[in-house]
Amino acid sequence: MKTAIIYYSYEGNTALAARTIAGEIKADIFEIKTVDEKKRTGFAKYLWGGGQVLRHKKPALKPLSLNTDGYDLLILGTPVWAGSPAPALVSFLSERNIKDKKIALFCCHRGGKRNVFDKLKALLPGNTIAGQIDFIDPVKETPTELKRKISEWVKAIGA
Image (cartoon, rainbow, N blue to C red):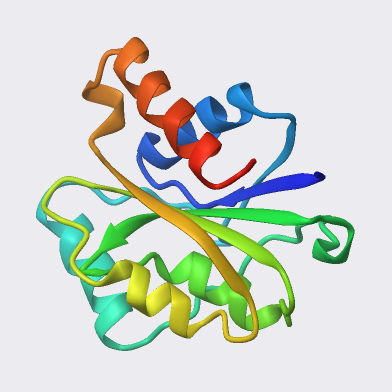
């Protein structure tokens, strides 16, 4: 099964989870990047990110050489922003017409995933969701524990 891992990461948590998943299975890995890569910190980060979500902003993305048609399984990853997927992933999905795919979802968060998976599924009609998993601050987990969770999950989704 040909697999692509597609993710957006702001502080490295989602990137770590994506790389760990890629280490468990043979997959191509693609990072979504925004044109505006300015990193905000502290309260400004939450105000800016939450504001993007609440105003339904879709940031401009850097080009990504990826044809999803060539993959049997897409694994999509996002940080949770204000209970939602990061706007960069929303932009990516709105630019692509992904249909008839097997898709697995993962998210990274500090305060709860809330309904991020429901929101992602709503952006992916016409696809089969194979599974989902959330990680709480993966950069703070031991590599062994993160790898164990991911190993169990990729088996469950048939990757």
